[in-house]
Figure (cartoon, rainbow, N blue to C red):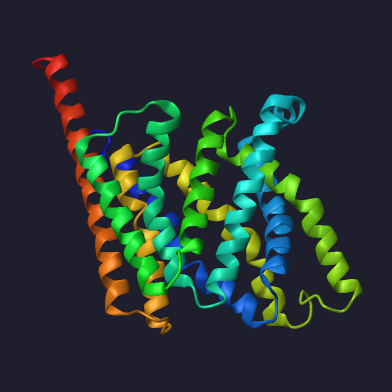
Length: 307
């Protein structure tokens, strides 16, 4: 056992917990929809309660000075305004999809995300893609094409979720701020619109917060389900090898896939084949990541020499 093992074990548990929560999140948003709230109302609560929880995180992390720096740095703030638009699109579409029988399409979108990140890295940052990486992207493209045939249309939900989150990742790569600070500022930018919408709904008797104990409970859950997994992810990502994080990220879409199938969403043989290509592309991606990690460790050992 290595000296780092005691540190890796809790980080691995945090990483698994983070992706399990994200994967099971449809089971949080669906009761909100069942209580009568639509995607925009849920989004309003997510922005408002997310801000409250994110503020608590910033307080615990003692990052108020960083928040002040970000809010007074126009260049950084502009990047975060753009990232806010991207994550808002991603959140509201995901909420709408899982409440309207499209959980399988959300699963496909998040399977595509790491492969799309790799493509964006090559396009925007001139990162080199290996032959295995190109093969993985090609398999994913075949999977998307087959999904389009199976659905009779482009899987726009999947593609929009994957593209919006990939763009979000690219933007956040440019922002010099901790994850907690960035999330707080994003919620701060969304919260005024979210609060205004919620107030309008309640003034017109269309709001669901307070309508029943169940509705109130589930809408309050919008805060921790937004912020909690990010805390676990931020803590785990700093302590785990990137190859391990790359493996863990497939937990969430797998759980969402199971939820969609169990809930009886249409799953034809052609859709199964399309997911097969996506899974094969993900497997190639993981194999390439693990191979690179092993090669990097071997190179470090050879440079270090005999102990």
